[in-house]
Amino acid sequence: MGHQCSYASVAQKKISLIMVQLVGRLHPLLVHLPIGMLVIGLLLFWRSKWRGITTDQTTSFVFLMASITAMLSCVSGYLLSTSNDEYGSLVIDHRNAAIMLTVISGVFWWLLVRQVQPLLQYILSLIVLAMLVVTGHQGGTLTHGESFLWRDEKTVDAELPVIKDIDKAIVYKDIVSPILSQKCVSCHGPNKQKGKLRLDGQEWIVKGGKSGATITEGNIDASEIIKRIVLPPDDEDHMPPKEKGQLTNQQITLIQWWVLKGASFSASVQELAPDASIQPALLSLTQNTRKEKAVQAALPEVEAASEKEIAFLKSKGAIVIPIAQGSNLLNVNFINCTAITDSVLTALKAIAPQLYWLKAEGPLVKDELVEAVSGAKYLKRLSLAGSGITQKSRQILKQLPQLEQINLYQTPIEEKKKTDTTKRS
Image (cartoon, rainbow, N blue to C red; front, side, top):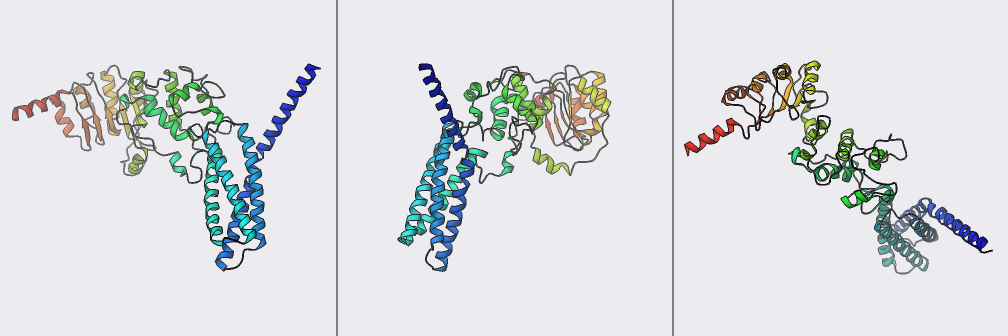
């Protein structure tokens, strides 16, 4: 008998839970009824006021039905919130605002029926409208993310901050966190935690969510965040949902690289020793994409560089990428090049007509490299910091017709300038 009673009790609890969930899930349907009725009721009320006539029974009836359906919506919403704890404090604010709206609507209906306090009626109509906007905004935020009503979709794909010194940038703080804030935190932040997951801080990321660990250091296959962002957009588990702003391929690559390198929250880019495969994604963070697109139309048209020479330079550790989509002008960076041989200089000389930006820093760089780019008539930016170039290169640099920016920090040329300045003083 004891076991039978126990089983019956468990069955009753399960049935009660199912009923609660079913009623709660009616909330998205029920909530639209009072919204529509309140809007219609307000329009009827203001129409009668503007025409100077007495409010009729139709308006009173509309507000009565609005109050009743609002109460039903409050009940279903409460039941829904008890079966889902992913929304945090925002659901409490939404619940309180909905209850307040219901009470005010009921008082407004009572005043209409009694035909008393016309000034108070008008004031309450404005309060009802304001509460309707606030409550609707909070409800939209719960289901669609923060700033639902007045969100500018352009902000979802807004330009991320440009990083001036990428090597010193903290990978999580300066690269990963801004991406998560832009694309993920609206549903996984302080106000809403879909899947019981927050992505707005280190402690929450480490804690993970209902589906398991957000990240597994050094293993992208076991990291839940990586699994979700690489799923096809039509997959129901894909994140962000397909109707929201999506991560770019470069942003996905950067997050994957961060996890593979141990998901450190304090390491800089330089400390994680980026290889050639991640360099294009990192370099993209140093450029203002919109600004580059704005000037793209003014870029000179040049013939495409030899694919053979580009492939050779890449095989030697150089990064060679177009400066803009559809342009043959090139951005070349020798950051991973361990030796600058004659064959490397020959390949560089072959693509000199297409050079637009060049970064060749460190003691391996000598005067021969400057000679190799003497035919770079479109070269705009050049960094030779820490190189071993001498005064022999000065005349070649002066003859580059389009050169606008040059970095000679810690080179013999810079030191010579300082010595001359000291003597003159």
